[in-house]
Amino acid sequence: MSDPLVFDAVALGVLRRRTIAPFETGEQVGDPGFSLTVRAAEVVVALGDENSGVGSLGAVILGMVQPPLGSCRVFGVDLNTLPRRERLNYRRRIGYLPVGDGLLHNLTLRDNVRLPLRFGSELGAAEIEQRTDAVLDRLRLQRFGGLRPADANEEERRRAALGRALAFDPALLVLEEPFAGLTDQVSVELMAVARGDNGMVRGQRTVFISGQSLPSLLHPEVDRAIHVVRGQALENQE
Amino acid sequence: MRLTLASLGRRMARWFARVGALARFCFEAIASYRTMPGAGRRVSGRVLANQLRFTALEGVGLVVLLSCVLSFLVISSAIRQLGQLGATDLIGKLMVVVIVRELGPLLTALAVTGRSGTAIAAELATNTVMGEVRALEAIGIEPFHYLVLPRVAGSIGSVMMLIVVFDGVAILSGLVAAGANGLSAERYFSGVLSTLTTVDIAASMFKGAIFGAVIGLLPSFQGLTVKPDPTEIPRAVIRATVGVIAMIFVFAAAFVLVAGG
Image (cartoon, rainbow over all chains, first blue to last red):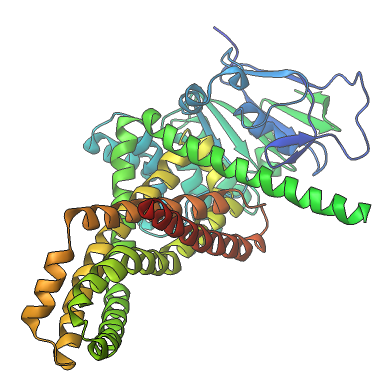
């Protein structure tokens, strides 16, 4: 069984639309790049400042940008080597919460959660509704499901975006800046949902978080914190 | 002189690159239909229904107004002028050739451009700037399937439907104008019906389909290729609107040349 996520000497830089530009101060030839293995059921957080390259990690995982050097494999597959159609299918195995929320503003929060299921699965309407209800319940979002993103507050939007990422019950969840602007308590709650916790029993979903900071209450909740400096994982802390 | 030529060359190169990108976008959008998942077709069908409601149904009022006024003015003026030459029998031909075949599709397409082409460009540019398009791709939804194809199909269907409305209203409005200017309904209708053929209707529908495709594709292209900067949204709308109007006129002229040939 392949590890859920493996970065192998990936050259990170500053994300510019669909390409990764070299760091403005110039990358050195021979820099080792970003290497990291995330094992099954691990929660790993990669932290770095704006220009560290940490912002490119989500796009690299999803095969939305091709790093100039190195490769990233998800469950043993390098998404950049797949044809476009298969890449889209494969992405449904990965839950993704982009920085901000990426919700469609012409849909309600509920419809945003439901959209990937309606578009990308052969489930019947009743089962889609059932799954959507379960996700909304888990995120305590039922009361606000009818709101459009513009009418919802930041916390509700983030809950809906997490719900959309969880719609397919993915084995790997990639979260970009998921806790920015949220209270520590809400962050802890969302982390438990992301991991798939069931009461006091810890969930078995693999979670990879990238961002600039992590709320202090969440430090005990992550298995590893990686610090990204100029495109490299320089410091590992157990 | 060399600098001017170099600058001109750079602009031409950029323009050709943009045209190439547009051609590729259109080809990929159309080709993507084959890969749309079955479930995706049902969802896109709903987006298409919304597009038809917004473009065709809510656009009927504007098209009826344009058609009424244009037909009344053209037929009234024509009866007065042709009456002096004793050639009012040509009114039917004028109605069919000028309004049904040429101005109907052209004005309908321009009205749809003003209402829906701008809306498509603004909506998709906003989707792009807000990161919604990237998020769609990231959750495994092809933006061509969800955003582009329903809008293109909706534009084609809407323009064709609105052309039927335009032509029908124009013929009726022409009847009112004929009556107001002393031409009997019988003479008016015999002139129109003896000239109107299925070829005219088919040509009108064909133009509608082409114009509709332009109204769906070009604003989608402009909307989805903006830089992630809110100030780009109005620019995308302007580029889309100007581009669509120019292309509609170019196609209209091409049809006349081909049909004339």
